[in-house]
Image (cartoon, rainbow, N blue to C red; front, side):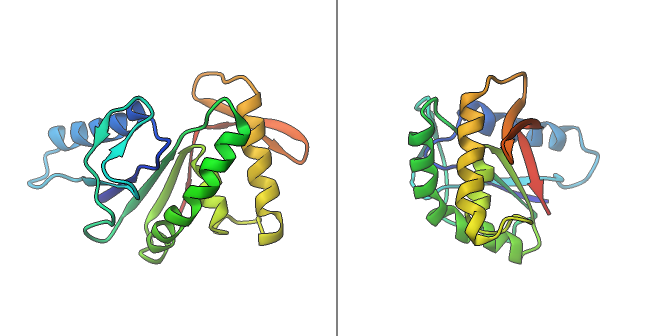
Length: 170
């Protein structure tokens, strides 16, 4: 299974590393003659540099068909700055997410990355007219509410609810 990890300018190195180390651990304990997982990083900007300054080797495009696309994005304490960064990143992330969809890959998002997914129009129930409103509410609510463990708060029709910080769309 080939996993592509998309690294935008606002990604956290701990998350990218944890994903890769988990895949490597599974590969190391597998009885399979070949590793069950292969992976690569892709990014619009190379080298891909995390918010903490750690550099990751990345390609512009996946080297082969994706089975899984992991889209990472971080949020800042400033909701307006986060929205600006994410709005800029949609133009770069959208073609990759649409390619993953065309390749029938699983698309998984982390932290603020559902905003990028919503920006492509790929989410069920979010039409073009409501996409910006829904994304804005999600980021503002997630930035304004305290976090509890790996859960975030997200606004839905004026009320905040809790969801796990990793979501996926098949």
